[in-house]
Picture 1: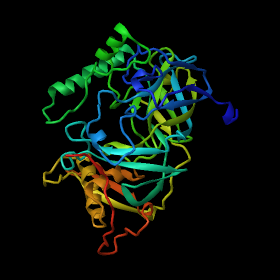
Picture 2: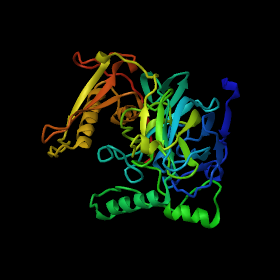
Picture 3: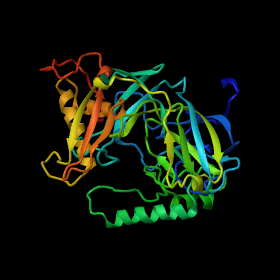
Picture 4: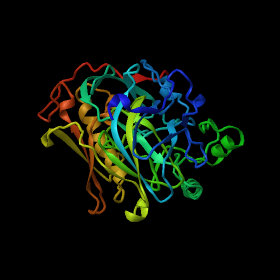
Length: 411
């Protein structure tokens, strides 16, 4: 089958509000109506809006990032009825291509305001910020982050099949328990939210039901994958998704031109609207045959290559920025590795927010160094030095350059 023969299973309209398009939905629920049908083994193109539904503009202000309505996200394309798929099967998703729309060759990376979304480092960087990226074939660059250019590893942030009613109830139970029993001074999970629910073509009582019961799309979950933000789910990769309802009700969205490991600023990839080409195949009784409880994937052969010696690598441990010792906390350790990198690149003239944005979307490598040497977990962050057009190797004092500024919100 030639590329010209591949049909588009669902189209979107970038000029039309996302919540007025029946091809989209923004909650996980088994009763969201099918939007289209795909044959077992068929290759199709699927169009996707950006995850916010077009709330972020190509401009030099982060006011849109500051004031984003997070009750609307994520807008996913689907759900699709997959021929022959039944509960207990596995849906194999082979990603053949991902591209931005030709009429929208740009994307964005953002930092949310601490009081509206927050992020990995919101206690240190609480204000909204943004960078716009322009696409040039496989490469991207930003007027908000000078002297940086790199190829994208384009991928979807979200792939998943609908939960069964029983699995949805379990999600809501355990996340509700976390909310009710946690004393942290921050939001730890998002319960079902009727406000701005979009359930595809559903209206009336069904739409109301989805709003009251539907799981938010924010976290990935072990039973179906969802919002896992794995940058290696790119061209040539194959993902094995559990099927829990008849027809699978497969959905996809949250397309990324590039992302660093961890997507640390929350809106941290280079978010874009575009088209994904996939082959969808059903493995009958696959969950039993593979003894599978959570998704599996095989990475594709396409990835930006930097030599092993070209990653400047920063270490982080389970001792936070205030000097408090934590026990084997890998999250604290990765935060510290990130902060060490921000401090290092600050020497060249970048602002902290510029580096924070860059580390969220550039092809950095995050790795677990050690999880056994009590009391400290060790995490590493590898920064490819060749994405810069000047030398950042650790050879001595740094020369500051004019790095301009990223987009900030008005006070």
